[in-house]
Length: 463
Image 1 (cartoon, helix red, strand yellow):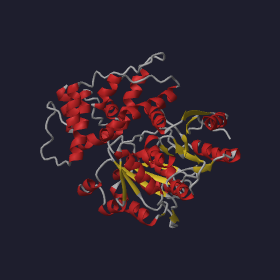
Image 2: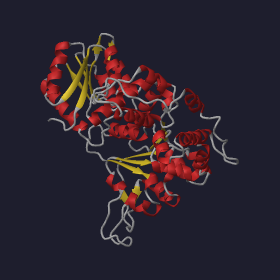
Image 3: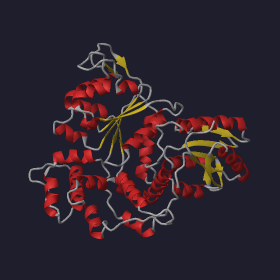
Image 4: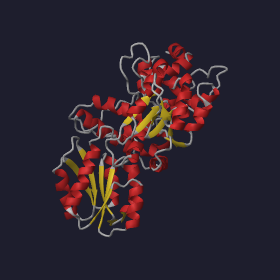
């Protein structure tokens, strides 16, 4: 019954002997446990490290498990939650189960029932698509709204969900969490991400819908498409606005009918699964530019979940940073250094154009510079001067040239334009370094420079 992956379990129960029994049982399966006797200490521990499994008592000295359950979604998003109580209330149990509760056990605890529950938990934890990192962690209202929206969407598998938000806000993580919430009892349900910007236009249809033998030169066998691979699970269409315009009509027909034909076949196949799309651009603006079909936009914007920028929930920065450091230290198999208070305060003043992805990059660079025996993170904030912070927070710099004449940009695009411009200036026009600073891929930055070629030239002239 043991799991292939190490896991951390948070036990919230004021009965010390009962908690000790759970610690022993879970420890025998390779799990690490942290015990809390009240909700206050549980909040503190959840802010210090990531937990994949939470065991929650219903009655605690400073509140109830029912009330705390909704907060857990913000403190430990994606965690498996099992509630144990000595006074079961069926109506509440049913309501919580519909809202994502994994299981509900009663006291006195039947060890056989707990072992059966734990076996199902370990199977879920071993699934390769399960996010190991809670990058969407937070207690700010904006984060709680996202998690509430994902839980509601999970109850309606047929609804197409569109995730919007800036680069680096965690749209892929949100899609994976939604996948988990949709299939809580099916750890084998496939999760298939498709980066629409990375698929060449000439093979987009074949990649998505598959191809039959002889469909084109070199097609010597039938090839399964990504839609077919995702059947019974989740198809995640990332950067949906980058889908080739000539193929968008076929994509629309698939979204409307959930049926498709592989290239070279007349046979209709049905897709049975969840469809999630994501974009860091305004679909309305892409329609105005003629880059995106209006009818496809209408089809996608039925159930929209907007992921907030990090600056919109900066109060969660310390909690996020601690969790990211835990993940990174697990990755590099080393002890976790602490973040100095001064560094944390400096980060809170930063605008974070690359959002959580940029935060992770900053912390990883610092960790790689930190000696193994150091108690504090060797964090280099020399580039983050007060002047740079104020410019980034305002989204504008007095040393930057004005926006190009005749360029019509909405407020979000102006902000993105300035962020790219500032990153290029800071890195002397180096595209790869600027992409790292922004927390985006080299290819993603190149696509933006295709739209705004004057940015690289301006950066080169200013350095």
